[in-house]
Length: 598
Image 1 (cartoon, one colour):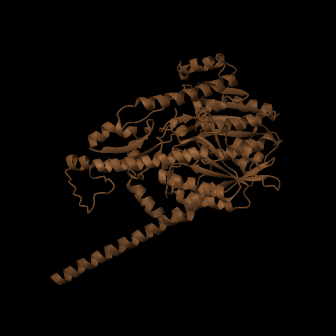
Image 2 (spheres, helix red, strand yellow):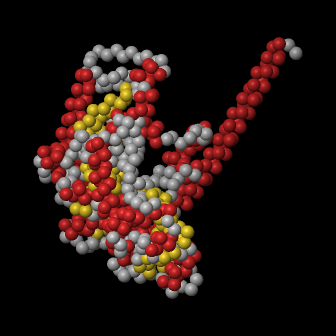
Image 3 (cartoon, one colour):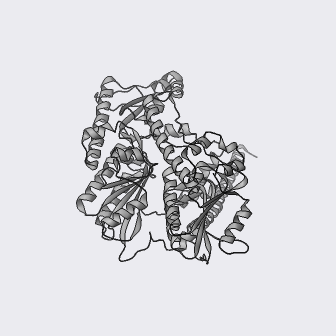
């Protein structure tokens, strides 16, 4: 065979191999895409379909399984997380509260079985569930609670029950409250990253983890204050419901109660009895006159077929919009509170003739000061263009930017366990020059035509830049304080006396005039109804949740490929998530650090 023929043969083989490889890739993509589409449709159908076959039988018991994570409202289904098995079980707080209110007057519901399975919930969320259960009990119906293990959040809710039971070898974890702050200063020094911070507020602690290796005295003071107040409230409520003293609850929390046996729980009146699960079900059956097993209906199924008084539309009921503002405040983010998306909703509600009033439900530690101002101003337009009342109901946290967007409301409601305030501003710009130059051997050179530029990541701030940034932050703080003073009908000096970036618990916020009343969303709705001259109300929720599952299908192939390639990479740690957050921050922040009470 000649050299030319050999070369042609080799080229032909390469062509055939390439062609077959391409065809194999195409067929694989087609098959994979088809499988994913069917999986996605199946997941969507399973997650979005209601259960039309569910019927409420006589002598039913509303079954509330407290497990997974409690969220304030329904969120769109993430099909990719469903397919990859990364989704977490969630409880929609508004759906749960609606179900409890509906069951209160439902003759077919005899009682509630509170099945505690280790839920993760905020303390204000727990308070909302407790308030609904207390309303339910006013009907004369009973609430029984059971758990193999009670974590503290579950137990706090369970104390509202008429009778509280635990597995004979179960456990109660009652330990008081704590909060943990992670400090990155030493790590940043090792990496060669300097946090350049300008701020206003002695108590504005969100920047401390990047500046200090330990907690400042001001931050220690504010955290000790609100932790002490919240725990005092919780232990008093648990003591009242269990008919013991608050000191007894406090002593138990100091005694490593999780290590005690269940007889100890009984003698200390933490529980009413010991039962295995089948015995608990037998008790429930006997309470409803059943011989074998009780008729349990999950609150999710019940909410789908019951007629909650909060959802019914009638000619006499006042229609109140509940506008949810949950998560970080940004200008145009895809998650959380994006001013670009929320502002138009606010302005549309002002024009909507079917809406009689608006309650803003806030659960946010803040974020962009610019975005917070846009939302605040939208509510000012709302008030100027319509006569509808505007209230705020605060959830677990409505601090910094979360308070900024709330301060213009006619009335502000907070739970005793809400964290709010944190009226302060900061800006943070990392300087990575030491990392590049000293650690990686990379030098950067910047050439500018003028000197009045914003600081960059690649060099430390000059004295002039720092002074300008401080002026920028000071202006933002003065604007924030003026908004609060106007909304709360107080002087700037009065607001500054309780500002300085300090976080307050709900009880302290009431004393300081930051909120008007202690209570939850239902209290705000009831009071607004009275102001509107009505006796009943129904609610409409905004923004409307839209599940755009068809858009997700378009990106499935790419996302699956990326997931498979990174399957051997560990989940990003909290440290890396924090650094990514800092990298994406807008220059001026009205944000408090995330506080999780343990």
